[in-house]
Image 1 (tube, rainbow, N blue to C red):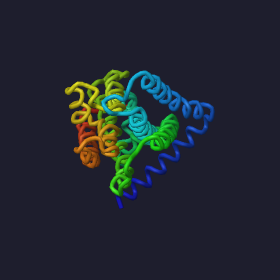
Image 2 (cartoon, one colour):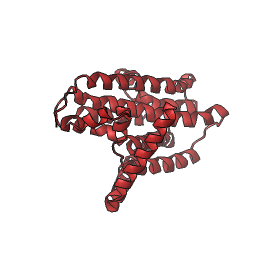
Image 3 (cartoon, helix red, strand yellow):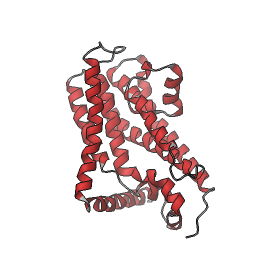
Image 4 (tube, rainbow, N blue to C red):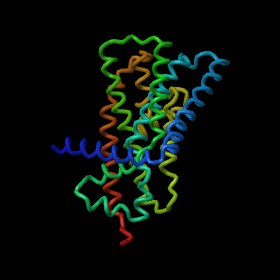
Length: 265
């Protein structure tokens, strides 16, 4: 019953936020395309790069594009559905967190659904288009386990991204500056996941696989799908990694909530 109520409230909050965004149709359309344009510029750079060099460590251009497609799509899902987590610092500083704590609804759910990012739709569309093109230009042996893994990948990757960004934004409980750059810094580290982690030094590989497990939203799933390494089956650990990240993010939030001091307005 609790899960069904959470799903119901999430859908209602999401619907209301969409109505709010559609009040300003021009802004909505601009945000819709802005995300796609930025992501396509990155793909164009990749095309120019691969036109001058051979495959990098056995990875072809379209195999890396498939990694990018996964990154873009899951980033779009998170931005569209859970953009509210980027408002935590504002909610803390303005005292708006008070009303979330007084309502008989999970404060985490209220924060996550406080806002939506229209640019997330553009990212999702870009991810789907790139995925279709990349799959048509690569060879994947589609066994039943790989087909089953695709929805697991999407859900797990979205959960990992949401949990990491949410925990990073909870730093606002400790860093009281109105402009907190820490969450953005953590978010930008996901750029390391856009390419095979073997391109980076071992400390960076460890960091984006264990500390901030962004590798589980792009590189490791790609290794499994393309059967690049015998350890590729580790991609099935993504759901466990997602659960771990969610539990850590939840603990960070409630730990930070102890420090919350309402401005009394």
